[in-house]
Image (cartoon, rainbow, N blue to C red; front, top):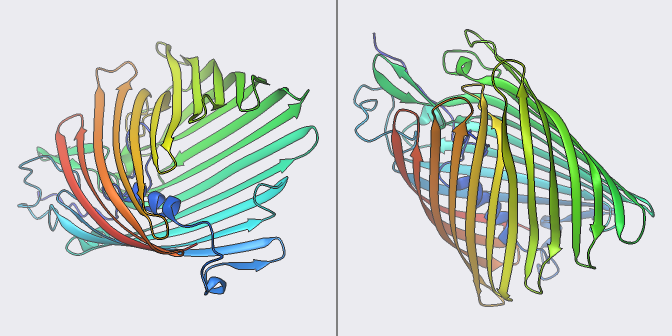
Length: 430
């Protein structure tokens, strides 16, 4: 019997652990970089009213990004895969286009004691040959911050509604390895941080976070995924070592809950206990960021418990005004969306940026990312490696064009894959 495989959707938003919902190649990073490279000073643009609207304390900023890309392995297939010859996909390689209108809104003065930020982005993915892979994705973010003489509060909330290619799992049909295709999925996240100022140097802190991941669609592929809930409650104390450096100690408790559809087996949930110490701010005149160390223990309702160190690094070295490098490392535990079991992931990222020129500068970037995931109580590890080099040129205060190339290497349970991706794009907006 012929397997009908019609994957749909461009890869969406990057996830954790199993690499769920990536954008085509480094597209998610491209859109983020385009935003970061976008100008913040709108005063020099004579048509400012078209790109920024102000009414009292409200500021609206529309933005549009267009990306044209080519990938030699759209569906993360292994070498010599027969799926194209069998007619299960239109083509292994393909050109794709992404249209991304975006709206940013702010209520209150930037950096003031009361501020509300809203962001909405719509990503429309279009493929030249694999037209069944066209998809639409919605990303919403809402943040708020209030600061008083004693109390400080901030919150970040996001929702993602995705229906795009997921390349992080595989299935076997009639002896043929079939990578993931179009998967409908929704991600919700909220975090709340409250601090009470005891003195000029010390504060009490109470924090909470909640993440929910669901796969509401139907069908064989959709039924392979577990919904999951992960929440944490943290409490502790932080102290200012200097005007630019703070030290925080937090203990936390939470749970990891899993549920499945169809024929997925029932799973055990886990209670989480742990703590961490974090130093954040400026370590030297040119080195800033944060360093976190700690430990987390998971106690499963059924089956053996596990524990692992928590490590986090987010450092930026500003060598000169136009030359910088960043290092990121994170070790944390999560839940697999396909096995439903606990995972521990190590992710490392190294990036450099060089700015050339002043009035209309070039931004040259290079990034290396590596991720290693171990599955609890299973003899299974997954690897992921990516190198991205790119350049962006600011045409005007309100327009930036960019190009990048990436090479990606992934190791899955039954096969490895390689992807070469090129993207060319333009961002209009402040």
